[in-house]
Length: 232
Image 1 (cartoon, helix red, strand yellow):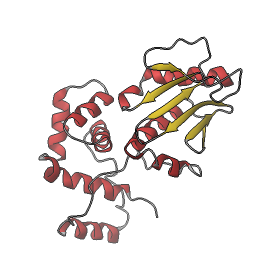
Image 2: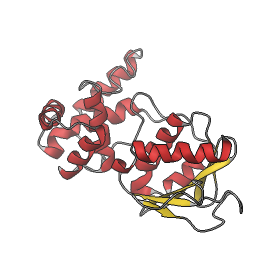
Image 3: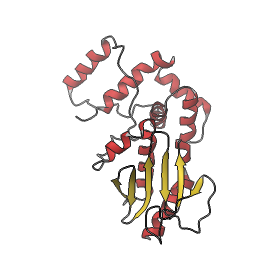
Image 4: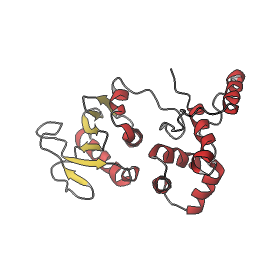
């Protein structure tokens, strides 16, 4: 059954006032008043206000969308569905209902993932939104990249494997084929020899990821470097 992100978004927005003391317009004004220069800075600030990563990321995307809900037009073509939603919103909220939204992409529902990826990403638990965001950014800088689920990691190739994303509930580990001559530092660690691509082109380096702020231009440059090292 497909996830109705429009419904999820409306439930999240409708619960903001009760759960946080501010409605959507008040949060949009508060974000703007901070004058934060980057999207990750906004997410970080919202997390300091008590939001989980997924909620902070959703609010940031709405702010980036001019304060308009991402799925504002979802379901408008179906009058009966709209009526049912209005009835549902007017009914008393169930005490057991959850207002925690999932982590969709900025403009559209996520594309279906390859076999096994959904189950593997589920193992990331709270870091699943971070893993999804990283995957989207990798695909943005290397559109031809393919993903394949393994037992504990995602193999990333274009066409040959140049990276692996280790998935865990406490952190994510991005292994990259940067070459033995690339120095460690700036959060980049030396990986274990023979870590993925064979004796000549091992996955030589690793970055431990726990925060969206780490997925910056520097990290994406490393991804492009690894892809070029292996595939040209």
